[in-house]
Length: 430
DNA sequence: TGTGTGCCCGGTTACTGCTC
DNA sequence: GAGCAGTAACCGGGCACACA
Image (cartoon, rainbow, N blue to C red; front, top):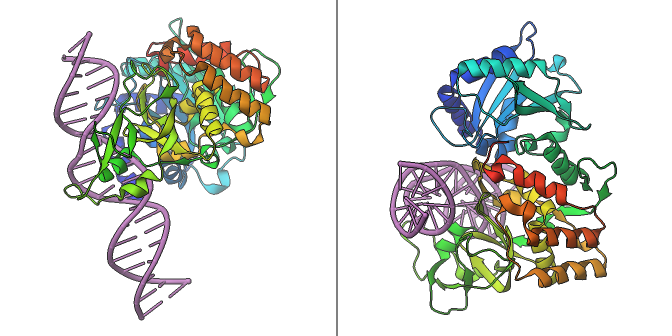
C-alpha cells in the first residue's frame, strides 16, 4: 500500500500545474528555517477524502509537517492540475526535524470559492493568503480572502490534534461556519447553529454499532443476475433521482442466483450474500446536485446495485435511521464523510459508512424512538426536492422540524440554507 | 457534446483455516 | 506461533449508454 501511494504521489507531483503550486509555495507558506525543505503536492481529492486518507497522511508525516491544505470549491474548476477535471487538493508541507516540531501545530485550510486560472492570479491570491490571519476553528468569525474587491475564499486554522484518527474534514466545506457545525456535531455531538450562543448535545454512535452494512455492487454481481421474474431475492434497482423522491421504497426487480461464476470471477454464494440483505438502504454514489433522498426504507429486506443495504435487528431503527440521514444534520454528516470524485459526484465508501456518526438510537427513550419511527410513517409518501432546493423544500423542513421536536433542538432552517448553498451541493459559485 | 447514471475489468487487501 | 493457501471483501476508474 505504501509503495502504491508513493508511486501515485510521485506521479501526481510530476503532472501538477507547476505555476499554481510554485506561487502558493513562494508566497503563502511559512518561512523556512535553516535545514528545512518544502513540499507542494497536488493530490486527487479521493486520496485525501477516501478510505486511504490515513495512509496518505502517514506517508507525508513520516518526514514532513503539514502546514496548509488548499481545496477548490469552484464549480467551474474543481481541479488544480491541467491533466484532469477531477477534484484535487493542494498540500504544502515542511520537512522539519523532530525537535523543531511544535506541540500546538495548526493546519491552515484555504477553501477557495474561485480557483485562480493562471500563474499571475495564483500569485495575487497567494499574496492575499499571507495577508489574512486564519480564523481559528474554536472561535467564531470568518477570515475572508479578498482579491480585487471580491471575496474568493476563506481561511480557517485547525489544531493538528483534531485530526488524530480523522480524515481531512477541513476540505469538505467551502465555509468555516459549515465546517464548524459539522465538526462540533461529529466530534462533540453538539448541535450548534451559527449565530446562536447555546448548543444542544445529542448521543452519537457509529452506524455499524446499530446495523451491518451489506455487500457492495460487485459482490451482488458476482452472486446474482438481475431478472424481472419473481424470485426469493428482491432488489431495489438503480438511483434515478426523478424516481427516488421518497423515503419509502419497494423492491422493483429480482435477483436470480448464478449457477456458474462469471468469466474470470469467483462465484459468490447467493445464500451468504442474501443474509446481508436489509430494509434500510443508503446511497452508495450520488450527484449531490440532483439527489433527493440519501436513505430509504423498504418493507422487505432487499439487496441493491447502487444502494448499500443495512441490516439491523429492529425495524424502528431502520425507519429512524432513514429519518436521521435525510434530515439536515444527517446530510451534514454524509457530506463530511463523503469521498469526493469530481465536485458533487461523490461516493459513500463502505469503510466510511460503517464509521458514519449517527444518532445513537439505543440511548433514546422509548417515546423518542417511537416518535422517530412515527415521523417516518407520517412522511413516507412526502416528496423531497433536490438538495440544492432543500432550503425551501416543505418535506425537508417538516422532517427537520420533526427531528428538532423529538430531540429538543433549535430551528434547523439556517443549517438548511448553509448546506444548500455549499458549492458542492448547489453547483454554483458562492 | 455534456451530463447523469450504471456496468464491470482487473485487480489488491483482509480474513480464515490448515499444516508444521 | 509462523507460514501459507484459498476465499471473502473491497476498490479505482475506464467505459457504455440514455438523454437533453
